[in-house]
Image (cartoon, rainbow, N blue to C red; front, side, top):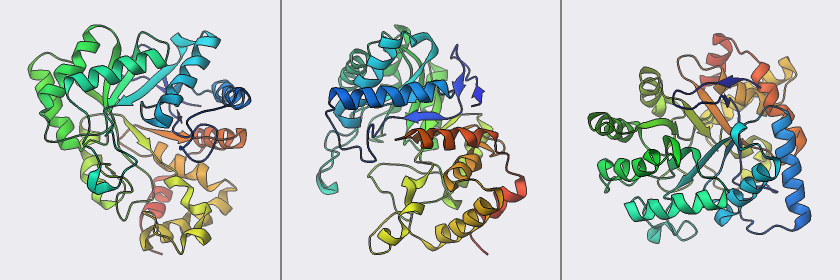
Length: 328
């Protein structure tokens, strides 16, 4: 495992972040776990920690809060709060499970943020969150309102650093300029979708990706502003493992460019004798001019080993370009 220091945080952050959106299974749609299942999840956390993970990503919406509860219990039982970087998110639209036409807006009003932050603190069994992020943006809400509401908890030492999940870099820039002008804490981290594989369309409403050519302007901004990127879904939902099943189904990653990249990835995988998942993470970790922390889910010990191995793989600029360029 490799680590990096993020200004404003008094502990190092592992370059790989353990994602908790679907604990215990490949699907996130589990809300209750038996004692036996909880022990298995604790064992997975233990193994990740032994292999160098110290950053864990959660959200108030994941498994309707169960991921925060289980993570908080594990940290508390082991007495390792000072060593763990807790990243969690709130302000997710209320109606995430309903059709898009009646999908709710992000909950970014002061009282809504207050409820989510205080609920997360209780679930996580802690009096502070290392990195807190609004899970979505809503451009109908002024950035001044959002920054001011979040800074109440920064001032109270309940939040160490602020980040933004699924925000466009233009809105982050606007928010940070307001924060700087008023002596307030700004967004220090951004968490968009980022992977070698790009979307044909957004899989969820109000999500934001910086993958592919459409994201090159954002990448330039992140580089110029030295803002760390916490990349979600870096393995593209594992679509490369399910091509035969996906051929008849609609999937955001099923496009000509990605299939060409996958072909090259398989060639490199054979050449280096490394799993595709390891190379995908290495691709992000080896990007020049930006600092990427992939958020990656693991449902077994093998996943964790393959993921951590990516920290020791150095891809050359030529190999990075070979993978990115969607041509043979």
